[in-house]
Image 1: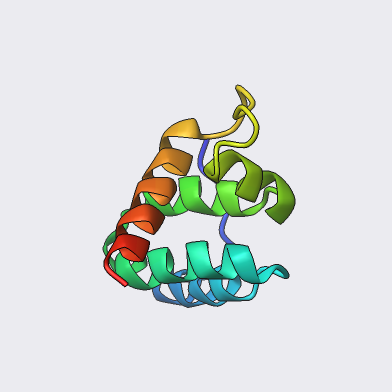
Image 2: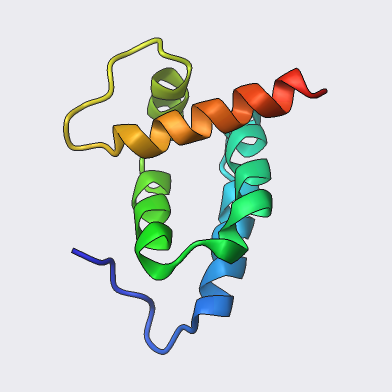
Length: 97
């Protein structure tokens, strides 16, 4: 099921809001994982992928970090595939530093 956009929110505004939210999570660690991913990919994501990312971004930072770092198993109701994409992106980005 697709998430509902705010009333009348267009895709460009949604992308800007999500990019801002990716960089201003509340924990610096998740800012540094989600922010660069959003910068690199958000403009090319179709609506369904934006929905997936937005749903994942609704999870708590502490949980996201544990799942991405492989410190805890990913619950069945969380998008493990997208978490794996984020982890690979982060690993590749760090390897290039």
